[in-house]
Image (cartoon, rainbow over all chains, first blue to last red; front, side, top):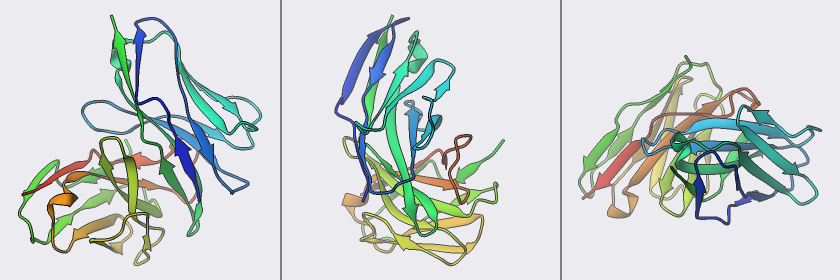
Length: 116
Length: 115
């Protein structure tokens, strides 16, 4: 069984500052992927970043980076230089194996509000 | 642009009605998923399918069934809708191995209200 824990229901950050959204995970799979998604108020789920369990380097995508600490089973999302448009729900997910596919398990999400 | 399309953005149905939520993807993905999303609970997996006519129960399958007659279409069925099934329903798809390039592609969601 897989589990994702996001302990921050809500976060506030000042525009142009960096913010870290926490995510810890649990899995018995030796190989897995970690994902972060953004969900603005419109409801669509936007794929942000991916980290493979065997990747040596932390993933980065523009202003997003994933602080992957495998021994601690954490996969925190760092957003640098926050923008007003970053205000949204953020979900961490882990993909494990089942039925021949990666089946993602999601956390409960963190609501991020960026203040001007 | 790759697409997962859910047929309805908003639906209002009566208790006891049979409800069909349709999801179509144009990416030739093998795997398709149905989630429901409720505030404070995140996304919970209802059913998934890794091939045509194949289906597997997720974490909360009770009260739901699914159909996958064609690779591109995955339907969620509420046999007899109840008020506790009022929720946002999200469909997603992926290839056989979710990658760092695409992750899982989601539809825009169907907000279902059962009255």
